[in-house]
Picture 1 (cartoon, rainbow, N blue to C red):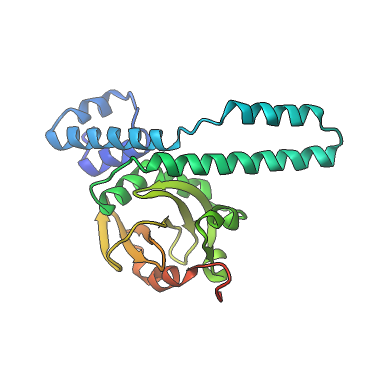
Picture 2 (tube, one colour):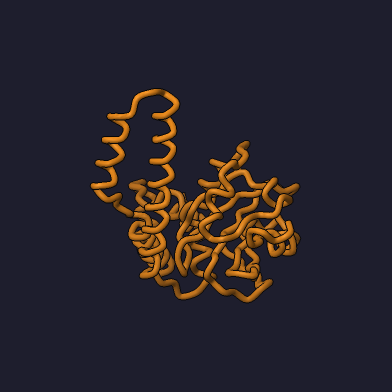
Length: 239
């Protein structure tokens, strides 16, 4: 079966290690396919370095000892919650530190490759969900979401961005789910439109950092510009 470049790039984003004979044949069939495969492999290495955050052994030892010596169900669960929070902080700090060494040629390149890497997978995971950890993820960036946009979020998670750690959101809209990448320390040309592989994205300048709103070519992501731009606010500001 023949495969065009867009289909090939889409598979690189969802299953870059595929051993399907047709996929392997196509990836070496023409210069543009070879380049796309090389770019994808480079991006995968960047992400691997960014998220490979080891937890210090002494922290794990302390947590295990606490769990072993703590009695009582309610008390033990409180310690488990504390442990989970501590590991989250360690992981977040590690991602921020490691991402400082990751470079992209442009924000446009980052947005396209980030979406190819896990955009469709995250959309699938968000289907039918409702996020309850928005404050937990965004608090470290010293921002919060205004209620209007917060009520539309079905999934939010940490993700690497060109300048460090950011957040990957899926929001429910009348035209289907849309992806938002929050880039807290990245400047963009506000309102710039991007297009890649049947997708479109609009860059949104924020009071601090920026965001990329990503949808299919049939979704009018520009309609969300004002909502997104006005929804990432500093704690204490009027919502």
